[in-house]
Every structure is written in structure tokens, then in C-alpha cells.
Figure 1 (cartoon, rainbow, N blue to C red):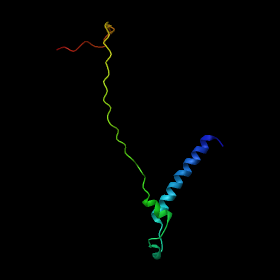
Figure 2 (figure 1 turned 135 degrees about the vertical axis):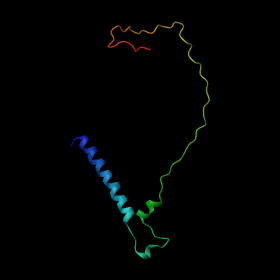
Figure 3 (figure 1 turned 135 degrees about the horizontal axis):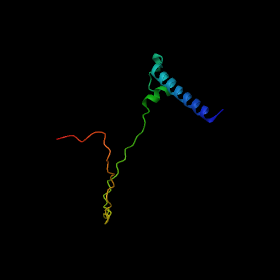
Figure 4 (figure 1 turned 120 degrees about the vertical axis):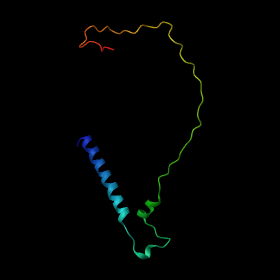
Length: 92
């Protein structure tokens, strides 16, 4: 079995697992007597387990940098002269 085929199979199985678990979480139910406070259901617990995210605000860093000095010698821009035109310039 090549590595590419193995990676594809793992990806497809992972996607299928996410879809199956999402369907189970959305469609499962309990009998009427399971509404007690001691009721434990791992599927119901996943709805209340949120993703813990933490925002970190870093203080801005103010720093000064010396700019490079301009070059003393300026080289001319090379533009070739176009002598063969397909039509004359527009008349004003």
C-alpha cells in the first residue's frame, strides 16, 4: 500500500467519523426519566464542551531604525529607442 493511498484513506475515514459523530449528536435522544441532574451522557457533554481559546494582546514595540543613505551615483535608465512603429503617433 503506497503512502499516498494510506493518507487518502485516513483522511476519508476522519471525515466520515466527523460526519457520523455530528449526526449522532444531533439526533440522539433519552427516555423521559433521564432528565435528572446526575444524568451523564458523553454525547450530551460534547455540546457543552467548548473550544478553549485565549487571546493574547502584545504591547506594541516602538523602535527607530536608520534609513540607508541614498546612492551617490545615479545610473541612467536604459530605454531602447523604438524606431519601427506600426502607425504614426496621434495628431493633436
